[in-house]
Length: 110
Image (cartoon, rainbow, N blue to C red):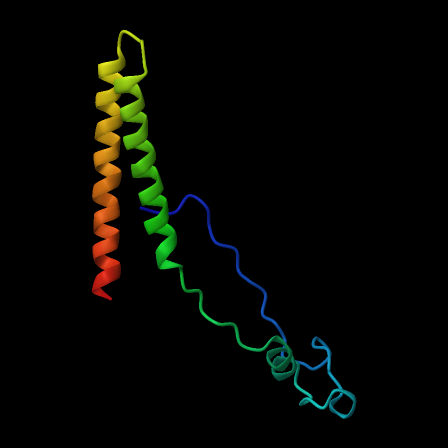
């Protein structure tokens, strides 16, 4: 099936030195080519390592909050549908508790 839009031909870039800016090597102490000058000034960036405890903390706090809300609905609420709301809070608390258990097991395995 043909594409609805045809691709535009890109212009060919020239490799002349007039298109690039030259960095004088005498003043900066770096080589004259702009690619190596940029690489020398940028340096290396360390790869991103996510914090393993942030997901564990979030799932723990969410589970504790849901269990606390379920307890609150059971003891202090006077709403007619408090058992329905409590059941939903317990289901959410179970889901977050399982998530916390899985994350804790993965962390302890490392």
